[in-house]
Amino acid sequence: MGPMPANLTPDYKKAEAAYRRARDPNERLELLQEMHRTIPKHKGTEHLRADIKTKIKELRDELAGPTKGGARSGPPTFIRPEGAAQVAIIGPPNSGKSSLHAALTGSHTHVGAYPFTTQFPEPGMLDIDDAQIQLVDLPPISSQHPIAWLGNTLQSADGALLVVDLGQPGCVEMIVEAREILAERRVTLTGTWDLSRSLNDDPFAIRLPTLLIANKADAIPAIEEDLDVCRELGDLHFPTMVVSTETGDGIDAIGPWLFRNLEIVRVYTKVPGKEPDMDRPYTVRHGATVGDVSLLVHRDLAASFHHARIWGQGSYDGQQVGKEHVVEDGDILEIHA
Ligand SMILES: Nc1nc2c(ncn2[C@@H]2O[C@H](COP(=O)(O)OP(=O)(O)O)[C@@H](O)[C@H]2O)c(=O)[nH]1
Ligand SMILES: [Mg+2]
Image (tube, rainbow, N blue to C red; front, side, top):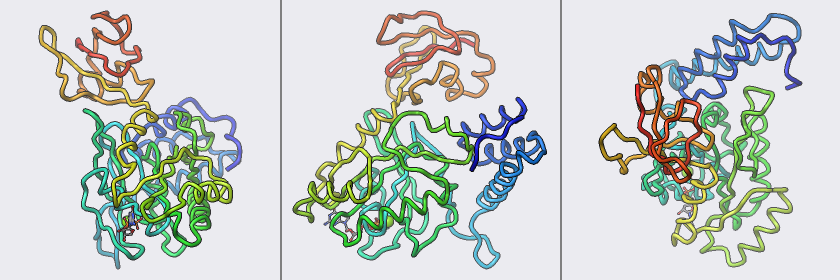
């Protein structure tokens, strides 16, 4: 994809910005159609227009469900995001992705001693204190098992756990291959966990902040050395954790690490004159505003919003704030409509 085409109209830019933020597949489809309607039709936008058309077709097919011999069947291939963030579990075959998913979420996804046990994306929730992160187990990323829907499914992910088994012969090659397959779908794995993925020129490119999980520590005696070799040969620059889903070693550190690095912010709400509800926070990511939280509370509330009062860690003690005010972890919010 070349540089951003010139002469894009404000209407188009607005639709594109909304598309990048949108998580709901139906909303994404509507916004793609809006992009298609508003994009200026000239030579310079030819590639982008073709991309938009392709995306519309892909998303329509995806929303219709997988087809087998013409009849619709099988589970959905996209997972509607729930909780504070969505993290995809990816990697080569048999590295322990499903085992990790089961250990972290209590799911009973298909674990098997043979590759390609997992066929469809499988959601599950990981609890961290009173917040939740959605983990999506996925089939292996391998040339032996191409998955047409992979790029679309990853579109809604906020990050990835790249699970590897360093004891497997050809582990490095499998990781390199997985990254090449992802690159074909314009998915880049990055070791940088900031919120810069939307700074990309290409609206259909995905930058996934990635945590490398070296699994099966119980079965690999010199795992730290293997890891160094793998990092060097595979040119991997990811933060890394060594774990064993078999013994549980290292597993408990993953949730808090994700919570911190996804910069999840918990906001508690209260009704005027009542105590705050400290059991069930609304969760957003760093940088989100009072307006974003009120949207989570209720769509109508966001529309009829007048002001809010906020209690927080810093200097806020019932102070009146507007929609644009940025919330912090642990804030208590009282919204006035
Ligand atoms: N020794 C050992 N085996 C593991 C570990 N985690 C998973 N396995 C085994 O590795 C195989 C593949 O696991 P699975 O979770 O299905 O891998 P996936 O294909 O990546 O989803 C199974 O036989 C698991 O029992 C681990 O931490 N240690
Ligand atoms: Mg699996």
